[in-house]
Length: 153
View 1: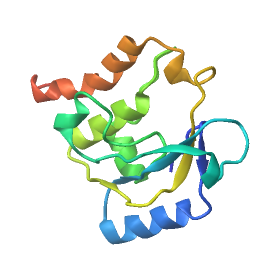
View 2: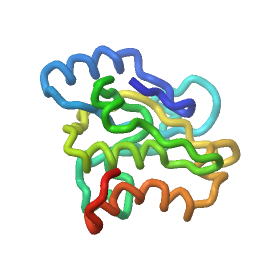
View 3: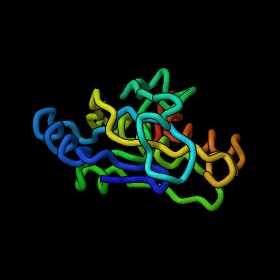
View 4: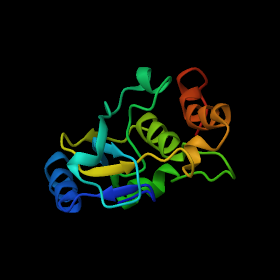
């Protein structure tokens, strides 16, 4: 399981992911999340909005991240065989890139229909808001070239 540094897990997140993995037989699971600002422990009163991923939609994924956030539950063998994350200095969206690549490689991604974590929204410190948006987009779109060009990822 991955929990990004700007995420705050709900108390039942791990047990819910484990149960969903057991029943769904999915290779990876993602979930909706609540978005809040600040550095204190999140509460329902601090939630500003919600984000719900669609899951394995390649047509939407070409334009927007519909797969999920960096907070996801994944089978270790599938993660390793898929090639894992790429790392590029001052370029974000490696979670989006990984999940797009994962789906394109035929792995089974599902969305757990429950809010399982909070995501901190801080434009002053988060990488997404402090890196080049074009480089970030190129990073996550890279695996989607397989739709048009038949090459290995």
